[in-house]
Amino acid sequence: MKEKIPGVRAAIPVSPEEALRRSEARYRALAEATSSIVWLLPPSGEFESEVPAWGAFTGQPFRAYRGQGWLEAIHPDDRPRVAAAWRRTVETGAPYEEEYRLRDGGGRERTVISCAAPVRGAVGEVVEWVGTSTDVTEQREAERGLRASEHDLRRILASITDAFYTLDREWRFTFLNGTARQLLRWEGADLLGRNIWEALPQTGPWGVRVEFERAVRDRVPVRFTVSGAAEEGRYELRAFPYDDGLSVFFTEVTEQWEQEARLHLLRQAVEASSNGILITDSALADDPITYVNPAFTAITGYTLEEAVGRNCRFLQGDDHAQPALDRLRRALQEGRPSSVVLRNYRADGALFWNELHVAPVEAADGTLLNYVGVITDATARVEAERMQQEQAGQLRVLSHQLVEAQEQERRALARELHDEIGQVLTALKLTLDTVRRDPVSTGPLLDDAQGIVHRLQEQVRTLSLDLRPSMLDDLGLVPALLYLFERVERQMGLTVRFTYDVALPVLPPEVATAAYRIAQEAMTNVARHAGGGEVDVDLRVEEERHVLELVLGVHDHGAGFDPASVGPASSGLSGMRERAHLLGGTLEVVSGHGTGTRVHAHLPLKR
Image (cartoon, rainbow, N blue to C red):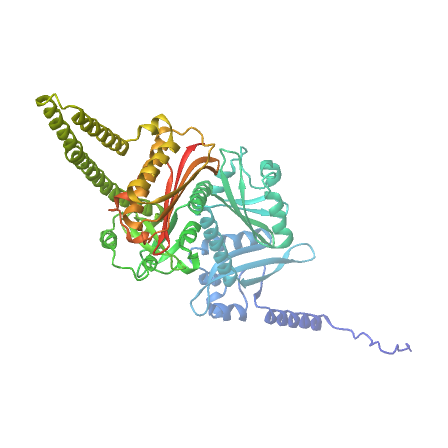
């Protein structure tokens, strides 16, 4: 007796019929477990027994697919091809595989792949065909969708205006659209499959390789601009990493860069301008300011943040009654340029005169987009014009006064000649007539005549000194002033204390004349308005800011007056100032009620 081994069953002999039954059971279990249709056919290749899976899928009963009837379930366009292929397989015993369209039990068209292999006997003859038919409809639809998507993607990439290409992990080109092929300018047949650094070595110095390697290494998109040679322009590159490599958009931005450079230059010019520049947005309500340059802030005191969003009329404050504003409003309503001068106010409230130039900016279709305003601080100019107008008025007054002074001088001269000299001459004539009629008694008459002639000489000398003292030309300024002050004391009853620099240089004639006339007019004013008394006169030479000046000071101790109350009609003061100004000098008058009057004339001599 054989010894049993624990845990091991003894093999039970199986008959050939039982082995065949078990094999068929395994085959049926396998056929039912798979999603494919499994079928067995005899060597003739025709259905001779029922295949439930085929009938369930196609809806054909056994009598319909028996023999060659299964071909009726195949699409009519595919049926001849499938029948011929199956016939060749049966004839040659070769394996079989075909894809075709098959109608299922619901009448829907499905895509099926059928495969068959022969089972051979002991001598190699075909004893049976084993085959499967697998429904691949969804798979084929997905593949068709994928191919369509890929086709659409390639069509889109090929049609975009930006250059586009892709690189694999070995830096080989895997795709290029038409624009990329044109811009990269490679002289070979095709860049596909070529290493970018070998095919286009000139891209290395541009920094492209560094950025591309950073994108792949750090898995981040990169965007940068490169400059080629002068004829190649500037380009912007955007690289995006993905699992299999890098996709790159490559755009020429030369024109855009040049425009940005021009805009940057214009902006710098606007920022550096000494004129204030503002821009408004006409598309918004009330045309608010959207930009001001630094000069605007320097002129007005308002920063960009304080000015933006406000209409530029805020610079007017409450001073809206300006005729120039009406002209400006009409120009803005009509959309035309305008130039006006306005009273405006700085941030601290100080008044300044704004010379404003406004011009519209229009789109190509004529739509008003903006207004550009250029402001200039014209305060100094306006004040100079005002002073010029005042001086012109004063000049007209002085001209009138000059004419009047000339007439007064002529009338005084005529009166002096008629009343004084004429009378003396008449007396002299009468005396001489008497001498002629009575020559015997000539002694006393000649004495009278001699006295008359002496008085006549004095009157002519006085008249000559009033017109122009000869000693001013012959002896100089100091002797002329001494003689003037002697006459003033004798004729006007004033006491003059005269101090002067004994080392006075030789004065130019025009300076000496001006100083004499200013002193003469000052003495006359003292006699007329100060009420008499004492007068201090000082004459010296000083150096002020490297300029040598003759300084004449006249100080009386009389009643005084308010200089602000004396207008340009005062010929005395105006004449003294005009004489000083004609020489490039100045004349200062300081006075007050009860404090007397001080007159200081500064007359430049030489630099």
